[in-house]
Figure 1: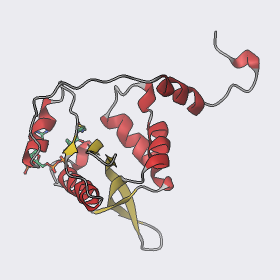
Figure 2 (figure 1 turned 45 degrees about the vertical axis):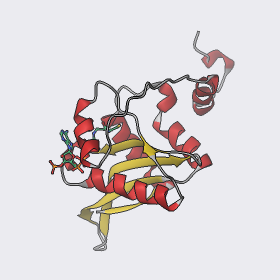
Figure 3 (figure 1 turned 180 degrees about the horizontal axis):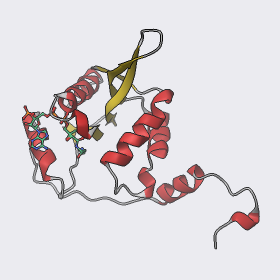
Figure 4 (figure 1 turned 135 degrees about the vertical axis):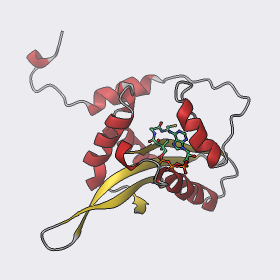
Length: 167
Ligand SMILES: CC(C)(COP(=O)(O)OP(=O)(O)OC[C@H]1O[C@@H](n2cnc3c(N)ncnc32)[C@H](O)[C@@H]1OP(=O)(O)O)[C@@H](O)C(=O)NCCC(=O)NCCS
């Protein structure tokens, strides 16, 4: 298993993985939109890949089995989209992805790393606890900006004719 920076040729595999792992994501989290916006700001987006088969010329064909995005704003580091394909779980891939992203953030001078877990996602709490993350007494507030809506519109293909506009 190898962890490396995301590259454009991974887009299809990563979209497939996220749609499988985060099926109820809102439209402003559409995979290709998230990836495009993330890479405009910081390249801290890693994928785990594994040999999946041997190709015609004897070279290994590799499959994306996990992802993690990290961000550092100069004050705190954040982890997002930690995901491993269901068939590759409990093999240490999620842990290695988190540790890889942590090393990248620490190398940038990041003093503390935060992450959010949906309250309904209790299982993942055990995963993060094993990696040294604990629930902190904080209340998370969020506000979705109008940019999110406009980004989704920008991302959608434009109708070819005015008559194609849904009413
Ligand atoms: C959370 C997730 C990334 C873990 O990936 P993984 O590769 O299976 O994790 P690891 O194999 O590194 O697990 C390390 C340890 O975490 C704990 N752990 C992992 N998954 C667990 C689960 N479902 N229930 C309880 N403990 C779990 C275990 O202690 C495990 O060690 P063990 O296998 O020796 O018992 C994966 O389950 C996943 O993609 N979940 C869906 C997406 C998601 O919810 N992401 C989090 C967004 S905040």
